[in-house]
Structures are given as structure tokens and as C-alpha cells.
Image (cartoon, rainbow over all chains, first blue to last red; front, top):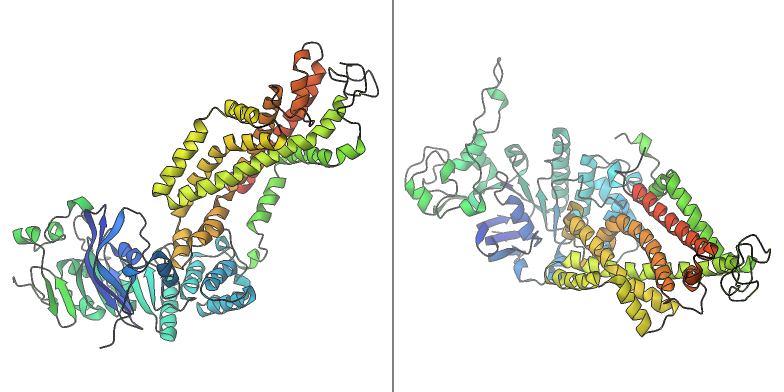
Length: 331
Length: 289
């Protein structure tokens, strides 16, 4: 089988060398494929993305173990300068809030152009021409005119397109999209996803899509990794997991998706919710982090770390086995 | 936003300039400072009387002798000539001290705010050391030890006034470096130098520009203070020197100190008004519509 473009192997990130923020996270994404990472706020999705780019927001956060291999090369072994060269050229990222992700003082053409010039020895005019092509590729109408706009003159959807243009300028092998449509409305979300899919079809870029929206997963992802409290609790092909989730947390997430077929004449049935919230860093015990909220949990779940079970292309970390959507049996 | 009505795209600087022109006090200040700059450049050509030459009886009041329209000092030197020729030195000291303040302050503050950690702690302890020095005493000591020449005086003022600029720059860098657009720029491969000079500094510029205008005014006051204490350069005419050399005659000849005092007052007022106007113009939240 082909080597994955990005392979995260047992990645752990700790706060002040004691509290684990990411705990043994393993992921992989192949060329031309999309990996969705899903979970509630505080589950470590964004932290995983920032750790891959080596953009830890604070010096108190350190990688305490594991490897991040981009085309086989461990990014954690690189010095700062080598890592800087990778960002924007081989690994790029787009962010949740396009409203604040562009430098407000420079025009679109200026910003995207300079990010192109960082990676290639080309002149200003050439960079401007390439920028116009990129803006066209991400579906901005009249790209020549948009070059001279300042970010505040663009809508959120257009700004996110500009961010995507900037991210794909260096033809990255992997593009990390951290909740790229959360700040946008639903029609714009569909357009942005279309831009990402077109870009992927044209270039074969692997995409890591971080989201809390199961709908986005079903629309975009080939594989999905469900994260909870810093661990990957379930991972596998997106359609299989959405159709038959194994882990109780994934089941909870999937059951929270409203379906049109559920609508009745007198309105919608009440959506199920998962009671409780993600535990704080210092409240995560030895056992399964989801145990306090899990309907199946018993003493063992709370005390001992669940085993990672493999079933074909899927894996799941639960004491109650993998039953592919069927009632779990104890193992 | 509709595309059709945003075809006119003013740059942020141009927009700020238009906003500044709408601020009457700021334009008034710009007028004063502009006049002082013109005076310092062309004044000596139009009014070529040597400010050190004795041209009238000592302590002649204003409007008594046509040769000294604003009166004469305790040696009989022309005060008007002192004002005209002193403007250049006064502005030079203010400008040079402010330039030094900005260069040291921004370099130290940017490094401390950007890199943080140990760099920040070291630079901030150093800044605090300079900040707690009694400014006037330190400048006096420096001027006395070296020589009371104009470059030394400007340096002394610069050395005691950069800490405030450094702290302001650091605070802005701390605020801006965690903004999304900085993280986004970093994720697209921007290096430290690029982030500092092209991403963070331009966004931090507004308060720094405002504060620079105020530093010029403060430096002019500082020079006057040193001159008043007799620590100015006695060989170069400045407004402070006129006040300083006539200080024993304040009671008998008010004009000898009042006239240069007013010149200083209005120049500093002008600079403050410019600073205020810039503050409003560069900060969209304060901009009046």
C-alpha cells in the first residue's frame, strides 16, 4: 500500500510537562484523500493541527512523544529554520475565523503575493499574476480587482477563499483546514467545501479537515478520526463509521445529527444530547476519559485505559469491544 | 457588502490622513509645528541678526526700540533673533532625542514582546533600570560628565526617555503576536524578521506614532529644563538658553523669559495636538464621523 503523505504516530503533547493535552494520537492521510477530525470543543483537534505545523501557542506546551512524518520525514527532528521552510510550501493551514486571519493593513494581492515570493524567487509582477490565477482558482470573481482590496472590504466567504489561495500557493502536500467554515453561513460553507474539493482534485493535496460538524464529515471526509479529551477514540472510513459507529462517544455524536426524515407535522423530535462536558485537563484520570458521560461505563472503564481494538480498517478504543453499531459485548 | 460601491479603495494611510484633516485641533497643531519648522529653516535668512551680538541697551522692553522689537536680554542681545535662530536647535534636539527614543525603544520592545521568555525578562529588567533612574538628574550627570553640547544633550534625553517607548512597543507586540493573522502568516512560512517588520510592527504603528509626537514635545521641554539649570550649550542659541541665561532677571524683565517660554509652550502644545489628532485618526474606534 502507498505510503501516507502525513502520518502522525503516537503524538503526545503536554502542558508544563505534566498534564497531557494530546495522548498517543495516531493519524494518517494519503495523497488525494481527506481525513476528518471530529470532536467537541476542547478535545484537542486544533492542538493536533498546531502540533503538526509546530505552531504551539505557548512555550509551556511541548511535544512529549511520538512522531509526525510528512512523506516519511519526521517534522519533530527539524530545526526551526527547516520547519519554517516546510510551512507554506509542503504543509499549509487555513483557520477558523477568516475575518481576523488576514493582515488588515495590506491588500489581498500584496499579502498573497508576498507569501508566494517567500517560497519562490520571482518578481512582484509575476507574483501578482500568480496571485490573480490563484484567486480565480478559488472562485473569486474578477480576481484582478480583488487584488487591490483590503481584507475589511471582503465578506467572510471571500476572505476564506483568499486564505485558501494563500495556503495552496506553495502547492502543499498536506493542507490542514481548522474549522474552515464554522464562522461562515451554510450556503457559503458548501461553496468553500467545493473549492477545497476542486483544489484537491486538481493537485492531489491531502486534506486534514477539523470540524465538529458531522455533516461536514459525511460531505468531505474519506476517513474520520473521532477525538475525545486528547485521545483518538475511533478511527476508520467515514461512511462506515457514520453508518455504524462503535464507540459510545461517536454514537452520541452521530445520534445528534438532525435528519430531515425525522421531521414530523408537529415539529422536530427532541434531539438527543450527550450529558456533561469534556473534562478539564486536571480531571482526566487513568481510565477512559469518556467514562463519566458514557451510558455503558462501569468501574473498569473509569480505572483502566481502554484497549485499542482493530477491525479491518477501523479501530476503536473502548472496553466494550467493536460491534459496528450493534449492541456491545464485554471483552 | 456590495461590490459596486467599494470600487474606490483608499489605503489605510490615506484614510487616516483624511480623518486627521477633519480634526480641527490636530490641524491647528500641525499649523503651529509647520510654522516653527518653516521658521527654523527660513527664519535666519529673513532675519539675519546674529543672536549673540549686542545690539541694544540691556533689558530693553519690547516695542521700545525698533532694533529689538521683542526687547533685549541682560546683555542687550536681540530676543527676536534668539527666537528665530534658536528654533532650529530646539527642533533638532527634540527631533534627535525622539529619533533615538524610537530606535532604542522599538528595538528593545519588539525583541522583548516578540521572543518573550528569557529575552523578555532580561530586556525588561534593563528597561526598568533605565526607567527608575531619576531622568533629570541622570541627564544632568551625563551632560556634566561629557560636555554640554547639543548632540550630548539630545543623547541624554534619548537615554532617559526610551523605556516608556519600549514598554509601549512590547505591550503592542504581545497583543498583536497572538492575533490570527500573525499565526496565519507564520503557518504560511513567514520568518521572524518578516513577522516583526511586515506583520506586527505595521499593526502596532498607530500608538507608536502618536507617542513619538509627544516624545518630541517632551524632549523640547527637557532641553529647556537643562538650559534653565545652566546645562545647555552656551555657544548655540536655543529657546532654553534664552530662558536659562536670563533667569536672574525674571522679576525685572518678564519678557526675557516669557517670550521664549511662549515659543516653547506653543510648539509643545502643537505637538501634543498633533499627537491627539493622530490618535483619533489612526484609531478607527475614536474616529468621529
